[in-house]
Length: 163
Image 1 (tube, rainbow, N blue to C red):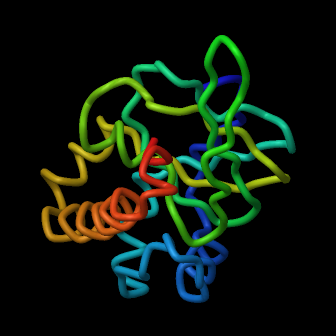
Image 2 (spheres, rainbow, N blue to C red):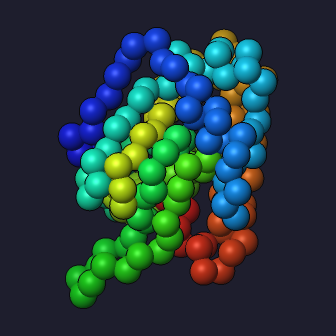
């Protein structure tokens, strides 16, 4: 991550819960949890705030963090020697980072805030802890993120937007 501000305090996920409950985008993540399950998940997440234009992660980075988007919008793009190609705009109620989260491979695209954004990150290490302590919750999250990944891969235009 590039200079993203993180907070380890007891998180208030009310905005995130609302974002998932009201998400309407074609690649939104359906709200997979009850309020009690969200409360159980909260300590495993780290809040991230991005200013417009700030880079969340770059293509080629080795990082498995899965980001749940509470507010704002993120530009997913591919950079090559000639130019930058926008692949998708991802908004609240969805996720980014799902490709590397599942594949354990470097990031396939770069992600930058298109507007002021608030995200919640789940690192690979914290997901492993969640899996050991709350396996049903971890499975529910993995299935919901996997559903987003499958929809993105099934959409020819956004196939390469799986990050």
